[in-house]
Image (cartoon, rainbow, N blue to C red; front, side, top):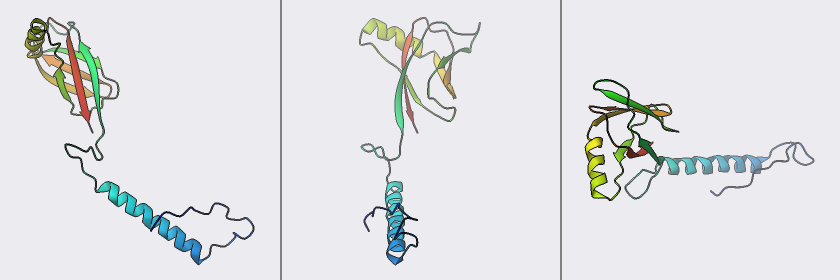
Length: 141
């Protein structure tokens, strides 16, 4: 059944008591909404369609200032919108220049853990990276 425009002038002249047609329209609209919701719920994410999945990419830079005097070293960065329940995909962004990327790859290898909190991520490293690391964070919910 197709959606039918609801009556919005109840209580005005000629619209004080709903009739059979009114109830049929209301029931038809309720069924239409249920069918739309059921169809929407049946959508699934695939490699080519996101379905109900929400996603976003956030870029940050880890500078060379880390906390701690011995391993594990830590660094907490503000990441707007991240939640403690997120398990993002995180990776270093390479520049395309071999010497820069070689240094980034080595420094990225020191980082062994990232823990999300509401509004931030804390990174842990076995050694303090000596170069800034541009990082891309992909969040999928």
